[in-house]
Structure formats: C-alpha cells, structure tokens
Amino acid sequence: MIQTSPAGRELLARAPLIDSFGRHVTYLRVSLTDACNFKCTYCVPPDGYVPMGRPSYLDREHIVRLVRLSESVGIERVRLTGGEPLLRHDIVEIVRDIKDQTTLRDISITTNGSRLKPLLQPLKDAGIDRINISLDSLDPARFKAVTQVNAYQQVLEAAHAALAMGFPLKLNMVVMNGLTADEIIRFVRMAYDHPVEVRFLEFMPLCGSGWTPEKVFPISTIRSIIREQFLLEEESDRGDQVAQVFKIMGGKGRVGLIASLTESFCGQCSRIRMTADGRIRPCLFSDVEVPLGDLLRGNAPDEAIVAGLREAVRIKPAGNQFKDTPFTNQGPNTSAQADASAAVVMQGLGG
Ligand code: SAM
Ligand code: SF4
Image 1 (cartoon, rainbow, N blue to C red):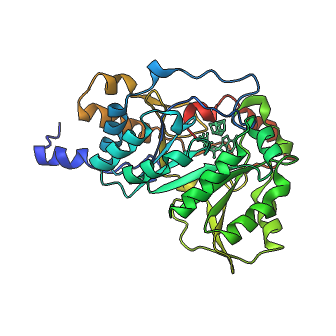
Image 2: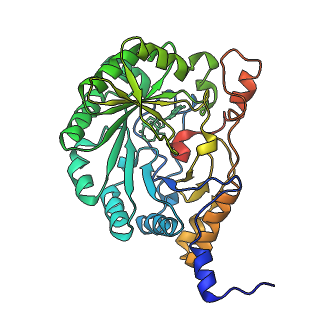
C-alpha cells in the first residue's frame, strides 16, 4: 500500500474536482427550498408538486458549510436557487455567511422576482454579485397564464430597481411555441434599451406531460428571428457558460441563447447541484446523486463531506440524452428522448 504523508494528504484533499471525462467542476447551484409561490406551467408538473417541507431543508449553517467545503476543492461560483429562494426567511443571512466565510468570485441568485424589490438592498449589503430574474412574458395577462400568479408588476419593478442599483441583471425567458415565442423581439428590444442580458431558454422536458415536442422553439430559429432585425456580435470565449452570448450592436444590453436540447453543452458542463435537503446531483437530467444531508446535519468531519462531493463528481454522467442526438421535434426518437427526463421536476431539484 502506498503511504501518503500528511502534507500529501493535505494536497490530495485540496485537489480540484475533475470528473471521469476530464471536466473541471467549478460551479455549484444550491437549492434553498423546493417550495414556490408561482406555478409556472413549464416547471410544475400538471398534477401539481408537493414540496418536501421545512423539516427536510438544510439549515443555514449546513448550507454555508457545504459551500465553504466546496470552495476548498475548487468551486468558484455559487448560485442560489430553488423552488423560490426568496421564500427562505433567512436568505439574507445565508448570503452574508457565504460571503463572510468564503472568497468565492461570484455569488448569484435566480428568482421569480416577486419578492425581490424590498430585498435588493439587504442582498446587496450581504454580498450578492448578480441576479437572474425569470420573466416569461411582457404582457401581464400572459404572464399570469404562464405563472398562474398576478405578479407581473412586482417582477418588472424589481427588475428596474435592480438595474437602478447597478446589479448585473439577466432575465430568463423560456420560449414556448404557441405561447410566448411571439415575444422574442419585444424582449430583445428591452435588452437594446437597457443594460440587461435577456436569455432565451429552450423548453426542457422536465415536468412530465406538461411538455410536448411541438412546444419546443429551437434556438436556431430564435437566432434567425433576432438577426432579421438586430445586428448581433458574439462575445468571444464562451468557456463553460451554458449561454451563447451576443452584444446587440448599438444597444445597451445583450442576448443569451441557451440551447439545452438542440445544441448540447454537456461537453463543457462545469456544474453540480445541491437539493434543498442536501443531495448532490451532478446532472439535472439524471437521477444519480450523493446524499449529504445526514452527514451535514450530523456534523460529520470535513473529509466525509468532501469525499461525498468527489463521489458526486466521479459519477457525473457524460451528458444527457440530447448530447449525441440533438433534439428535433420531428425526429423518430423525439418521444424516447423526452421520456428519459419526464420524471425530473426542476422545482424539486433546483433549476
Ligand atoms: N424560482 C426561481 C425562478 O423561477 O427563477 C428559481 C428556480 S427555477 C426552477 C430556475 C430556472 O429554471 C428559471 O429560469 C426557469 O425559467 C427555468 N426552468 C424551469 N423549468 C424549465 C423547463 N421545463 N425548461 C426550461 N427552463 C425551465
Ligand atoms: Fe417557481 Fe421558478 Fe418553477 Fe416558476 S420556474 S414554478 S417561479 S420554481
């Protein structure tokens, strides 16, 4: 047996997270709750979603410890998500503790924006670097049809307030054929007029029968629609970013295109996720996971937590079912591709 010196063990303990396919894992998405005050039709399964409930959620100290240990093995960026992360009553304290106890280069949050406005200043003071708001329609009635909540005004006001405070802001829009696809140009105009990145997402088959192939609006079509009216210049060095990002020539903002189904980015994936009850999920589309909730709650030694993180990275799949066979909504394997992920509920995993 090879003996390792204490210094060697120390070095090994700090070795970066590299998966079986050579990808560096540097990005952690942390779900703070699986509860949500919206019921977005593309996210919540048609027969509803019952959150696991408060007793299951990790406490702030456990979340912060996990983030701190993740940083020690190479995580550089953390995004807080959910469910709706701003439903956590201790959201500001979570951000502040992460900021105080780490030197992460980027702490961000993805929110539906409904509760954001009064929290902007406290979140800024606590150390949030960037904000993503989900906004699927610029029409209040349609916004309500998508989210099933009457909160358009609050979300829009929060977005404007975030910009006024100087936050780097991204707006996520899930483009659905027959529902929101005709608003693409309206969103791009918004990004032309304001220093915001509007991100168009392909509708992923993550919630059972709420998804159908016909509702997917491919990014290639979105790109063409935008290029008919705007001059786009691609930003160089996409790195491990999931979005292909473009400057809008003459405008203030940017456009981001996220082609999860039709132009897979699994080969560059640098992320893992933690669910609100402490399961590490290395791929959104796969049910492989490493449960760390009990270890965190039981104050297990650092090495045990880090070993769990490494195991999650070790079993990270090469990619999802679209990696080698890009989705088309006409192909013979369309349904089979979608079925493979139909049981995954984004709200439960942390989107
Ligand atoms: N509640 C927060 C929000 O809506 O921003 C955070 C959680 S939500 C699950 C994170 C992101 O996942 C949102 O931008 C949402 O639009 C996206 N999302 C959810 N279901 C999706 C689906 N089926 N296809 C594509 N994106 C989806
Ligand atoms: Fe809630 Fe976000 Fe899912 Fe909408 S996308 S239901 S806001 S978790």
